[in-house]
Amino acid sequence: MFQNQKANILVLSIVAVLAISLATPVAQADLDIRGIYISTSKDHLDGTAITDPWVFEMWVDFEDTGTLDHIDVTGSASFTVSKENGHWEYEPEDDYSTLAALRGDYPEGTYTFDFENISDTVLRTVDLVYSGLSEPGGPVNFTYPSVNHQTGIPLNPMFTWDGVDSEDGDALGMWLWDPDTKNDIYWDAPVSMDTLDWTPGPLLPNHDYDLEVSVFEVINPQEGPALPTMTVGVDEFEYGLMNEYLNEIEFTTTPVPGAVFLGAIGISMVGWLCRHRAQ
Image (cartoon, rainbow, N blue to C red; front, side):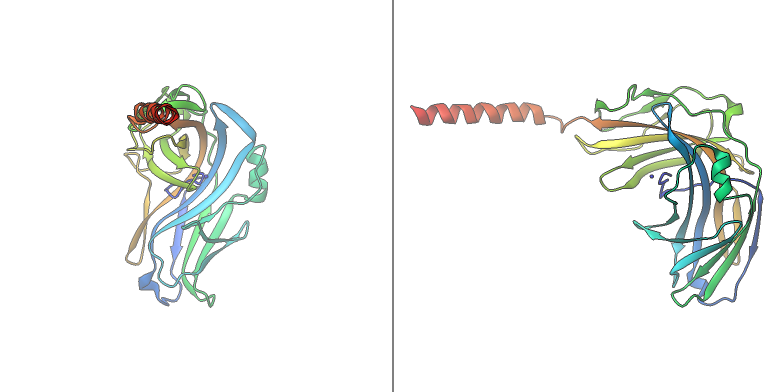
């Protein structure tokens, strides 16, 4: 999904030193980074951790990609960030039983991001050093929707959940995922740990959605709790390094208002026509 997470916005994993260096400025003015995010997440469904719940994800948001074709990441682990479903992200297929097992493949250390065009010319380089985040205390528990696969959710709902101790994390993040389009259609992150409800916006009738709320441990969050920003050349962008406990619940919205009533009228009319023709 973040989890796809999420098209939408945040990074998580380990550290607090972002060292930025510039490569030879080839087409550099056209490359405008909005945010760089690394996230390790323990996924729960309706409060219960799924099998092999720990996942690793990295994504980059842009104002303008210019001639960018791919992002090569090298260091303690090596991989390529490419454009998938409209988003620049990396999410490996492997899931992990523990955070320690995940970090066996994606260990702490220095990671170098080389932003490259189709000819492998480096447009920009960002060096990220990260280490030392702790696990959050646990996921939030939903109060509305109150059960997984709940139906009849209104088209402009207010979702609610139990409070989480401020010592359990630094911030919350909320996402609404559409499994049909495989996109986060609404999100709000990071927000205060005191947040207990969210009204994301109008939803489609008779449609399935996934609601996700995460508790984050974040390195060096700003007050707000906005994520820190870094400046490279003329660019200022968010970065996020986090561990998160994510809780998901699935639900279905109510049919179009009046659809049941109109459907009943239609059935009655069909019945009347059948009787009339039979006479």
